[in-house]
Image (cartoon, rainbow, N blue to C red):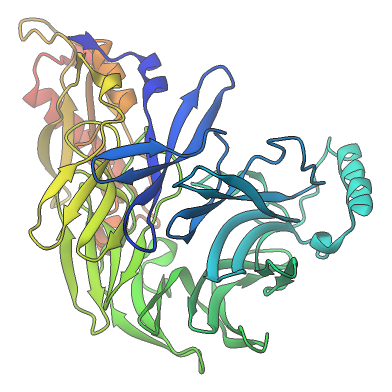
Length: 519
């Protein structure tokens, strides 16, 4: 068996943005690979049918996509793939691609930097776009004016104006990175036949979440000029009249998402009154007329995926309404599972296999998911809700790990501060119990994240280099409730003590990792 090297990272592929076709006959997904020569990630759409996976696009720069109908994909692609389209400034080119005959053509060009698109009906789309609030009418400008504006921006590119907080953001999924001063996520309607882009949200309003039910759009976000509060208002937009109404003006909730189950709008968020900004989310029913929010469930669980991993890439789905349920991803101690919520507040477990549900979609009783299971990078899995059977259906990363030594995490439960916590130890490559070895203690950030017994390339490379590798989930980690995760006023105290207690437990349990060598 060969040891895992740092360079093996270049061979891994990631899976994200899984979506069944409207008729359920196939499933699209984005496969991400790494290109060392261009120092970039390559994102392309593939389609899975029973028994096979076929690559659809080859540009490597596919952005967001949707199914426009059961055999046609609509996606954001290269700005100037064939040389016939030369958009000016911030623009997004959308392509239609028929998966049956491989016919592809430009569908339309939007004069904004689009982030997502959603089909409301034929020819009518809901679009979110990153917009500069300094130029609120940018999307209306002629090419000549846009060229002049781009020249002015280029002349000023050696400095940045920072007059609000936050002015910088780290990249998270497909979100912004770098300077974000006056950058807002704006909501638009696009009427394809009329080539008309209609703004729904105001220039300074940052849209956080939205959902559609019938002829009604509900969206949440925050308008600010100097400081972002991260507390959100709610608006209702009528697709027939174009009227937009503020329905919840009090900025008393942080909103993670808005979903629609049947005709009921569900808000996933928190008032942050008990445990601050890191408080676990609750589920609320939103009345789109009055703006009133009624509590549906307060499960005190981490909603979303907070499992650390260094070999996943791309956007993922945390929620999906299907039938009378809202399915959602939740981090439970050391695993990421799939649950479902009914409107009466009942929560049921759906997928609890050790590992991680990274992304998913549902068609009837069938769930397709991107999973981190069995100590390997992401693969696509098929789960039947009817019989509870899960099967792996892709082997995109099998070649990268062929004949490679993978150190299996050794679970080590330890005690500190009257808490029981989880840790793991990876044995070094070629481990000989008569020899001694150095060790590497790995500490996660967050703090509301977790480690688990899943594949982590950096740790495997360290084990391959001859180190014991050990890591744990101290107090402050997610997946064990609000009280366990609350570190306000305690950073660097109880979490540090937990990590040191874990280190002592490791040294006691694994004497071949000697203190003298480790230090």
